[in-house]
Length: 275
Ligand code: ATR
Image 1 (tube, helix red, strand yellow):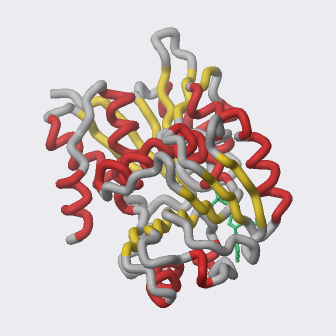
Image 2: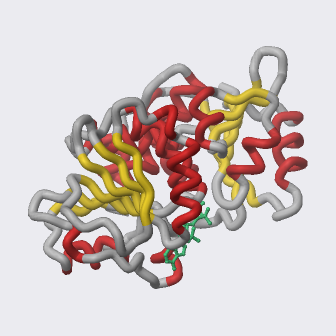
C-alpha cells in the first residue's frame, strides 16, 4: 500500500514529537500515512514547502520559527488561521493553492475542556505572554465565552495591542491587558504562554493570582515539571498541567483536517507520558 506523505517543518526539529504522535494516529486509525521531520534552513522555508508539495506531499505541520512565515506564504487561510496570524498546518486545496490553518488554539481548548475537564465559559482567565504563541490561542479561548480574559505581559504595549486586535472576538467577555505586577485576585485558570522559562526565568507575578481552586496550565511541555508549574506549586496551586495534551490535540486536529478522521487522543497522551 502506498502511503501519503506528511511532515513537520521547523528549525531545529530533531526533538519534535510530531512524527511519533502521527505514527500512533496512523496505526490507530489504519490510515496510510507516513510522517517525517524536515529541518528547513532559516532562510529556506518557502523553498522547502514548495519542494515538499512538488514531490507529492499532502500536508505539513509548521513549528518554530516558521509559523508566521507559513501564514504569509499561504494563498488561502482558514478563519482561525487568519485570526491567529500564524499557521501550524498547511495543505493544498483541489486547485493546488496552498491553504494555511491553525489548530493550536482548538488543541489547547480541547485539552482543557475535554481531557482535563476545565470549564472556560463564565470563568476568569489570566493569559501570560503576548507573542505568537498567545495570539494563536486567543480566538478559540474567547469562543468559549469566559467572563474575563486578562492578557498580562512584560511589555504592556504588546498585551494592549493584542487586546485591541481581539476586541471583536470578545463578545460578552471582559478582555483586558496589563503588566505582570497588576493582576491580584485569584483567577480560575492561568495559562502561561510566555517563553520565559526557556531562559530559566519566571514572569514576576504576585502569588495571590493563585487561589485554592486555580488551575494552572503551561503551554510548554517538558519531561520534568516546567519552571512555571514549579513556581505555581510552590505558591499553593494543586492543579497544574503542562502542554503535552495540547501538543497531541493540535496534532489530532491537523490529522482530522488532512484525513477527515479524528484519532483518539487519550491513549496517545498516555503512551507519550511513558516514553
Ligand atoms: P512565541 O512565538 O513563543 O510566543 P514571541 O512571539 O517571541 O514567541 O513571544 C515571547 C513571549 O514571551 C512574549 O510575551 C515575551 O514578552 P515580551 O513581549 O515582553 O518580550 C515573553 N517573554 C520572553 N522572555 C521572557 C522573560 N524572560 N520574562 C517574561 N516574559 C518573557
